[in-house]
Image 1 (cartoon, helix red, strand yellow):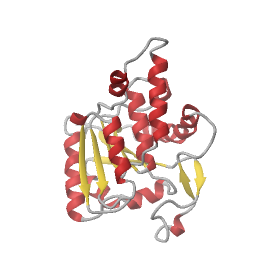
Image 2 (image 1 turned 180 degrees about the vertical axis):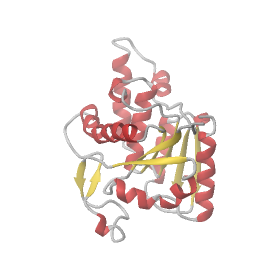
Image 3 (image 1 turned 30 degrees about the vertical axis):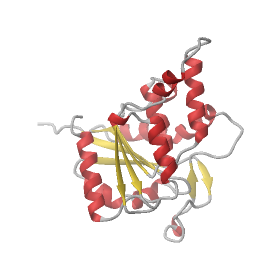
Image 4 (image 1 turned 90 degrees about the vertical axis):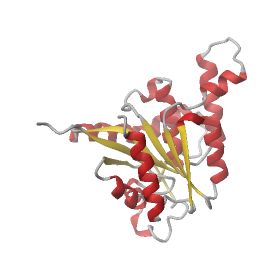
Length: 240
């Protein structure tokens, strides 16, 4: 009798780190979930300096990479470069692991912002992420927020509606993500207020679960926080 396909989470690291570093950063959380999920780690395309909290612990694990970089290009063009390594990793993973399917994402900091954009684009069935497997839920850790992304989303909505006038209430509704999400927020995180702003702006309340933990801009590491986060993630995946 064939065993059912395993579930996998696409793991997207923060700014100034790498897939290898993120594997270490979430080692306790992934260990708590190892019987339920495989973990697919991807590395960003742009070389950069170490991110917040990376030095000195990960000093020997360079080089370091980021998803976004300062450029005059539109966000749509920047997303092409951002998505290239993710699409490649997803394709390679699926070929090498036919008995494991990607059903969700686990993303940290700047990577969580990337995951949010992908989730929103998939919800709107935008061609730029047509290669992305169906994402049923996502866990965001200490998500970073860029107002330019909200502006870009607004522009995408307006363009899709053509020349007709759109009321602000409809735009705000269409900017929200209606897929189950878990938001892990460090109480001492320097971007905590911005993470909360992102939740308020881009997530429908009934689909967003928020868990605050005693920590800074880093994945949770205390036993009680890991156990609680793991239970919430397993609950999100129960119906898949």
